[in-house]
Image 1 (cartoon, rainbow, N blue to C red):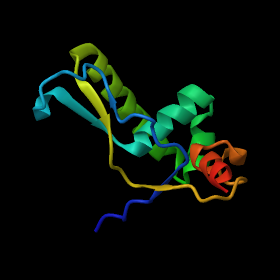
Image 2 (image 1 turned 135 degrees about the vertical axis):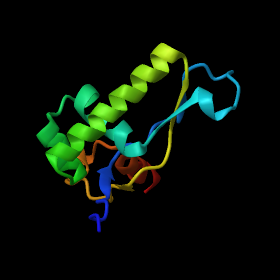
Image 3 (image 1 turned 180 degrees about the horizontal axis):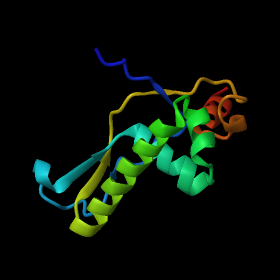
Image 4 (image 1 turned 90 degrees about the vertical axis):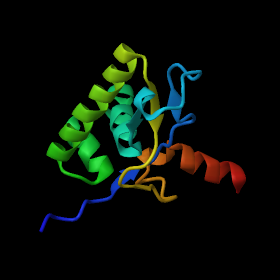
Length: 119
């Protein structure tokens, strides 16, 4: 029996969940689905500049898991760019961070900022 999948901590949800040629036909062959946890891995490693180990600690998974998620996410981005497919971000095994600023990139996530603005 395989181990159950571990939920990945995610602090940022994308502002938009579709990227690419948005006028393309709505058939399944023209879409690439990237999960929210793959998006978060790309954000943390490529945009924020964290190492695999730091990213793994933020997302509460093993470094080898992050390595696999990152590789798959980059493959999907490349396929979208090279083959002109629409990249959709949805689904995955994730939970949004809580409102604790210390656990949430020192209060730098969109969810924490929304809570501050609304209070």
